[in-house]
Image 1 (cartoon, one colour):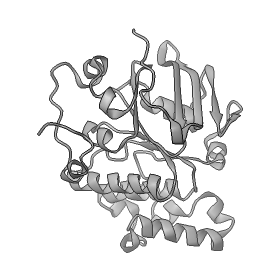
Image 2 (tube, rainbow, N blue to C red):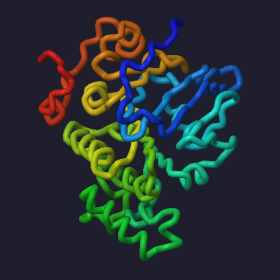
Image 3 (spheres, rainbow, N blue to C red):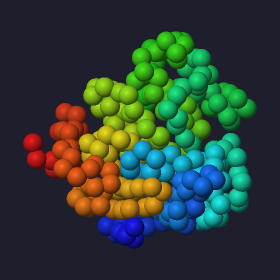
Image 4 (tube, helix red, strand yellow):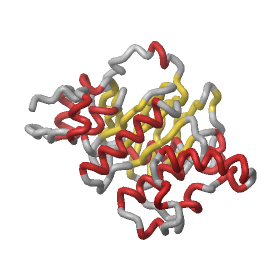
Length: 269
């Protein structure tokens, strides 16, 4: 397979990576999930990781947050090489939070009052209240999460991750299964997390319209190999990306109206 393209950006303002994943190789028996993958995540950016099913996207997030431990490679977070075999709770304490596709908590308060909030309840209660206001979920604070609409459950899951007060937020398909209106709301919250809260975000998402509109940079994986890395406008026209991810002759759908109005996609309507 051809070597991945170099990032088509000059980092400038985000010249210092908050996290560097260097030469990550991860295998499960004979299955190679990641093969010598290197990705830099720059402070303050919104990075999207895309690729077909089985490309290694979630595996890379699992390596970053300590669920998986690679056979080769290293992780450097805030300039310090991370020691091997840290567990997810130890990684979270360093400032890396992660959303998952399913919400398991029974009540919103259980989902948000997590980690350090249990130790310093009064101080962290104010922070959690800020998250509730930020995500506009005041009206459901006493509602069992399982009784909420799916899109609202995903918003609670986002709040759970924010409650850890991260500097790096990993978002694993936060819009999966959502309708257009719910995707617009989630896109707005993700942009606000980056712009208002100053949290660096990494996003896995299959909706290419959303990815190309809200991301600063896109990394493409295919069969565990990094295929491309660059700004959305360049990655979307890369023939290898079109073939591997979209399929030859694929017609890209129009973005949701709210995203189309922001005008970054540049899709011919």
